[in-house]
Length: 125
Length: 360
Image 1 (tube, rainbow over the protein chains, first blue to last red):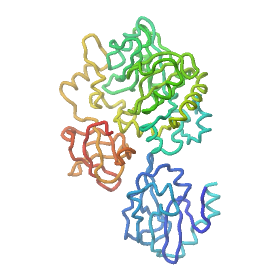
Image 2 (spheres, chains in turn orange, red):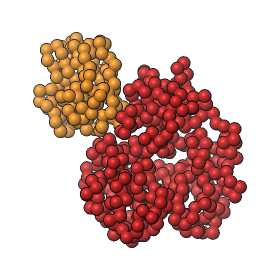
Image 3 (cartoon, each protein chain N blue to C red):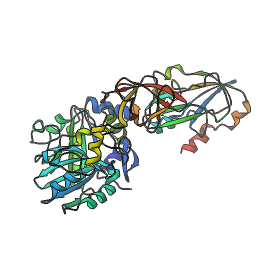
Image 4 (cartoon, rainbow over the protein chains, first blue to last red):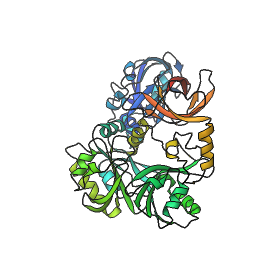
């Protein structure tokens, strides 16, 4: 299972790449493997200010629908435009082409609450 | 949790196993979409050993089958099969099933795994004429070999000429190293192929022979996930979703397996005949989404005034059409083909159109 060291994680199986006050968010390799073929990603919260742990979108596999939660509070600045036509990018490149959103972080102190790669590895064991 | 005779083979091929109808079953092996396309374009193998099998024997066998099932079993000659359902006495459906005529006084009923106990109790309760009933569900393994290349693969494993077995016909004979197998030209995928019923003791041998024979054709094992998307693209009903104890076969578009003929009396014949003659207030219909999204079981179907006019019974993203498709009961007035309807998906209202099934 691929769990890059440079990323932060949540217990909801999202990864977070923090770069200054911008966070890029996606779902982990473990999560995409559990979900199976991703057939639809619905994110309609662009430009909205959302709190940490609020739902920012849903991801649909063939058999299941799962909510995706804000790992940090902030504004949804950008939604990955490629996912509409190619939702399977989430399966193929969960940490690269399959990213979901970019957040303008509103409270940088929340970053400390995210899991390290090692914490996440222990979680999914 | 029960296991089928193929359990170790699923594990060896990396299946993701899930509980289903009391069995540990493979839901997928290498991705539902790829498995789906493998069956549409080539050949795939499903373990469907969880299905239930009841024998009906003796001089009262036909009388029993005629009473409990909606289709006309008297037209079945030896070696023929038909799709049918058990009406539940209240105008609903106990289960849908296949009826095989094995012999003059011997039928095989193949029922859904999730309903085996319910069906067995129901059949015994209705057996007032004294047919011999036997529940052989635990003794029989079943594989469905489906897809346009299925016949080509299986033909390597038997001297029986498979092209002489028409759709909904079967023979009993040797194949893949097993002596006595029901070789049935049936399936739940709409892509052609056979279903093989064998003794548990032959299961491993048959599985291995089929996979060896199918290397050249790219044969793959297929899970329950793709079984569902394949059947839905063809508009085949799934018990528990599209039909159940509260839906009538007439509403479900199963009038073609509900035969009102003089020589056949059956449970709920009167109710269904009345529905056929006077019409029903809702119909099971297929629809395609014109907006992006995926309909799911139990989502509301609404009109442009946001009034609820039905409910989704099955839905998925069609791997062939790459579009959301579904079926659901829709109220009278909205069931004409090409009618615009809407599916309520979470907080969104997605445009859809009533269409003829099959979808592909």
